[in-house]
Image 1 (tube, each protein chain N blue to C red):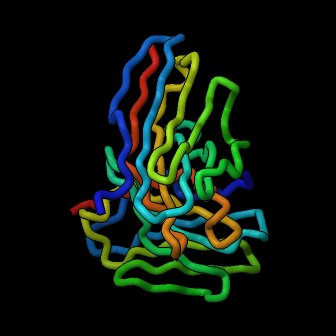
Image 2: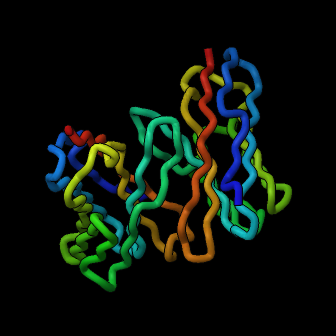
Length: 112
Length: 113
């Protein structure tokens, strides 16, 4: 299995632009998580899905952030409009039936 | 999210020594306590995990010690090697891991040759 696949790996954009991050979870995993990592705040859970349904989005920082999971093999995290303080590494992770989280390699976002 | 407090922030250990990282939690509903290892430019990867029905779990050179009454758990790395140099995160969740992990802030470990 190729693992959790995220794209893009790096994104540099200007303040006010829309950013879309993409994730393909491991086949057969029924939970998908989006995390954000910064030096100051560490790893923060933003939102997670079970069987494509959002379960808890209390970690989403503002209405500028939205996430969707239209099917079991694809999820997006969108930021519109983006701001410099959104600069971070965004990780997607899927959960195996034994409870282990598998993380992708992350999308490093820089908002100028 | 309930907080998980991790210490130290950084740690330098000589090759062959024992590395010890500590975590404390508040939420008594937590029932799953994993440790993750992260190398630069990579996502975190599961190292070892424990559930509160046991006080210790060992996998190779890595051991988790768990103290339910004190709400603390720790990672011990025996015979530390330069390849162990990475950032280590403790985490906790309820629902057997289904509720999403709450992570500690991480420990940057350096093993000196």
